[in-house]
Length: 223
Image (cartoon, rainbow, N blue to C red):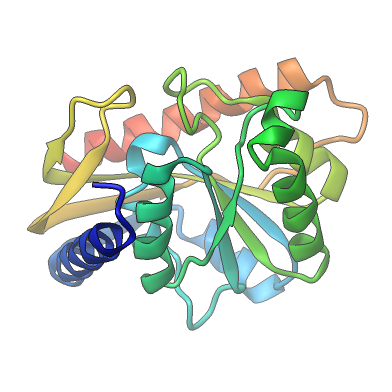
């Protein structure tokens, strides 16, 4: 399954499936004005959504209007397969981890990824992160995303996304895989900026609660 040719073939199949689903899903948005303001203002932005929605997240960003975007994807072999599919969907990957920048995370590319994301934000780009990835716990934000927000000063835009019907996998995060011709809902939070003196633990707990709230709201509207 990890042979480069197999990975390339599977990423193409996954990309094709998602592209077909995104085209046929009936999308609706709540508080879309939040992202519209971000697109109109331009400049750097950090976009957060839970790891269970990685197969849905690429559908919500308008590449014709929004900032050029990069996605943080883990260094694992499974991440390689996913990174190839995301690049085809317009989300080129920065490989690393969203967890705290410990020595172990640096060995996994976390330190280099953090610096690359900072450079991208300073250039006015957008960064998409699933802050409970790559291994969880589910819907519990790691420090990496909050640290990036504090260091960069970039606004943070959170959203929840759901579709019904959908396939829910038996993974640690209960990942949602869309089905064609389903109903899709995106719920946006108003952008926030991390104070430079904010406590990381308090920040990630508050943001986790907000991100779970908009995700639950999307599920409610899609039901």
